[in-house]
Image (cartoon, rainbow, N blue to C red; front, side):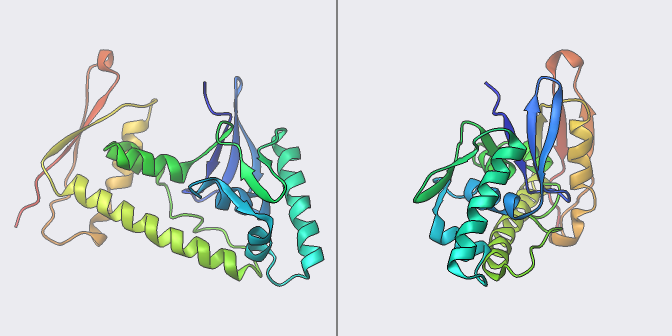
Length: 219
């Protein structure tokens, strides 16, 4: 079954999206609600203690005020999503059966060797267009993860552009165009010996796939 919610953080417009039979609905835009979801959803166990979250997002507030603010944010997430995506008392958790995060999907594609699919997810650096005032701890955490993901993206590009390869891309209409757009213009972070000219060819419709042909690096 399709996971009901997608957390988009690798985009210029971070948000939480609900998937319904009628299409997608934006539930939460970037705010402390989305920041809390992003922190939890990118952790290996999807959980953190309330003390950790308070320190992360309200480090300049009095403890009592910060705990109250955390309860309010959790309540707002549930209200806007119309679902109990976040739960727990001592520890706060996201429900993995209800929500998936593009960061997790990106790394899952990388691990499985689905490089074109991973690249198509990476529209912008992690939360690079959003910032929360007075959240030094959160911004430091986000910057650390942003650097890790950017390095993984860079290695992905070197792999795609630096070898003789055919990568099969399967996706909805326009998917191949999105991958081509991502690859175009990335010569700035590659070694100068790479030939980044790309050729895209659409495979006959019965195959439901497109091929991406990357030339071998040349000295």
